[in-house]
Image 1: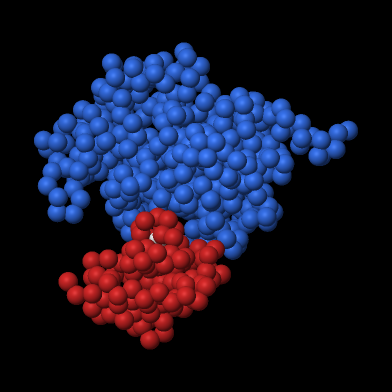
Image 2: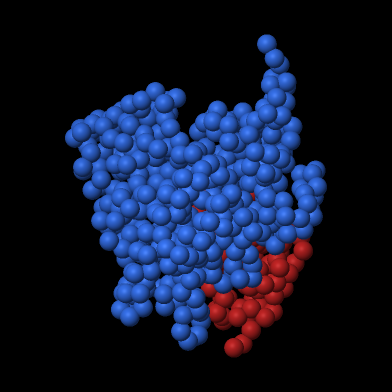
Length: 426
Length: 109
Ligand code: FES
C-alpha cells in the first residue's frame, strides 16, 4: 500500500479541480496542497490554487496587487468570453461588467452604496419578516414528513427575501433559480460551449427583466432597493451617481450572487441537522439562546463554505507563500481549504460552536471585498435554523450520502438537491 | 466644524493622537484615516465583522455608552477578548460630548 506521503505527492502531480473525484471529495487534495505545494499551479484550468489561510489573508489585504476586476472578468465565460459578451450585446440589452467586482478606488465608491442597504441594523429589522417567510415554508412541508431541502426550502426562502428587498414579483421564482445557475456557471470553469449558449440565453432573459423593472422605477420610484440604486446619490450630489450599466450589474449581483450562495448555506444547514445528531441536540437544548445560534451559524459557514473558491489576478510580479508569481497570474483562493487548516482551526472537521476564533473563517472572503450581504445571510440562516429546530425533528437524509450531486462548478459547492425526512415536533 | 480629539493606543503600545476628527464620522473612520494599526474594519462599518474592536478607557465609558443589541451580538463572537468596556469603533459616533476620548485597540483574533 502506498504511504500517505506518496499518495499526497501523486495527488499533487495528477490531481486537478476538474477531476470529478476531486470535485466531489476535495479535502484530501486541499490537505496535500497545503502541505506540499500551497501555491499550486493547476494546469487544467491554468490557475494557481492558493490553499493556505495566511496566504489568502495576504492577498485579501492587498486588493491592488491582487485584482478582483481582472481575476473575476478573466474567469467569466473562460474559453468563450468573446462569444458570450457578443451574445449579451446583441440579445441581452448589453454586456455589463460587474461594477462590484472591481478594484479600489472605483470599488470603494460602489461598495459604499451597497453597504448602506445591508447594515446589521437594517437586517435586524427584517428578522420578523424572515421568520414569517420561514414559517410559511415549514407550514407547507411539515405534514409531508419529507422535502427536498434545496427546492422546497433553501431556494424559495432566499429568493422570496431578495425579491421583497429588491421590489420584484415573487412569481418569477423559477426563472431566478435558472438565472442563478446560468450566472454562477460563468465563473465555474466547467461548462462546455453548448451549455454556455444555453446559459447566455438565460442571462439575456435575466437582463431584459431587470432592465424593464429599472425603467419602471426611473419614472416611478418606490420603497425598494431597485429604486434606491436607480436613484443612488452620494452625499448631497445631484442625480444618480451610477450609470445605468453599473446599476444593471448591481441589481443582477444582488439578485443572483447573494441568493445562490445563501441558498447553498441553508441546504448545508439541513444537511448538518440530518447528519450530526449531537449538533442538532445542542440546538434543540439552546434554541432560545441567540448567542449560541449566532455561533452555530459561523461554524456552519466555516465547516461547509458555500463558496469554495473565488479568483484574483496579479497586477505585478509578486512573491507569495514561497512562490514567485508572474504579473497576470490567475489565482483561485481556496476558501474551503483555508477553513480546513488544522493549524488555524484545530480538529477542523469537528463541528465546534465554542471555537475561540470562530469568525476567522474566510467563507465571506475578506479585506475590502468581504461579502457585502453577510449580515442578511447570517440572519436568514439563523432564523431558518431556529424555526426548523423548533418545529421539526429527527431529520434524516433520504438518499445515500454518496448520492448527493453537486453543481458542476469550481466556484461553489452547491447541492443540486437534498431529499430529507423528518417528523413534526408534537 | 470644530475638531474633536481622540487618542488610540495600538497593540504595540504606540499612542496615536488624532486631533482633526469630526462630528460626521465614527471613531473607526477617524482611526482608519489616521492609519491606526489593528483597526481593519473589513465590513466597512456596518457592525458585521468585529475587526474594529476597541476598549474604551474607564473614564469615557459613561459618555460613550453601552453597545446596542446588534453590536452586543457581534461582540459575542469575540468573547475570548471581550471586556466590559469593549465597543466596536464603527458604532461610536464622534461628537463634542466625546471630545478627548481615549481607547485601546483590541488584539487581532
Ligand atoms: S467595521 Fe466591521 S464591525 Fe465595525
